[in-house]
Image (cartoon, rainbow over the protein chains, first blue to last red):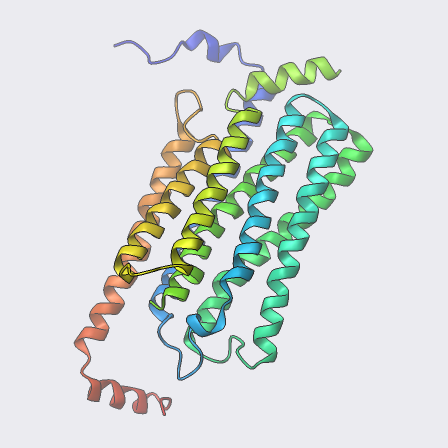
Length: 204
Length: 127
């Protein structure tokens, strides 16, 4: 039986690179388990979304135009995060700082839009205490917002680190992990947009 | 310093994207999002069932587009551990979501309306 890959190439790997790819794989496995967490919240929402307890339904509550704005802001931030990683590959410190700053600002805008929406809902008495539907809605979208908040704090720390230390090997690894995390949050949002908001607008 | 760094990066990460791949991913995602939105807003005479099928398809296409162009899944070299873990995640997610829906719908189906009312009263909640 022949081995599928050349054993010699593996043995000549620089040890540091090996740890790096292991770190990335480990972080990837964490991301996948986070997907399972979101899946359980989606399942909860799917089971409870009709239980409005005489309160408002998704169709009555959400403005699709507002959510579309949020979606496009988050999608653009995912794109600028990709551009930041391209600059990282070319080793342009200032471009990395510039694109991550843009990503950070777009993330803040997204979070502000989401929190404004939450505040508006809570003030008109449609908070998570209103019905099973709203509890599962706030649990799902709130968990996503919490991830965004953590990502933004991480990004701020990395901006300061890159600004002070530059593109060291450790920082390159951390920025790569951060970009995986940020793209993952945008992917989760596709499903929130479709299942919560578009299905909600259709009244199903 | 900078040159060695770059060499290390390109060596240990063969799965990075290009400007072209990021732009393709971004434009496709925008088009898919906006078309799903427009379909729901201007539904015309289409039935809800048809629109649901289309927007679910659009979401799944966008999911694959972003996995491929933003996360570069499937571009890694053998052995493809990331892809393997990804498919295991999909399996768990499908069991979790469809299993929950199946069980809960089955429980609802087995409860007659009067049973539901009695059950809620017994629980001290309900009306």
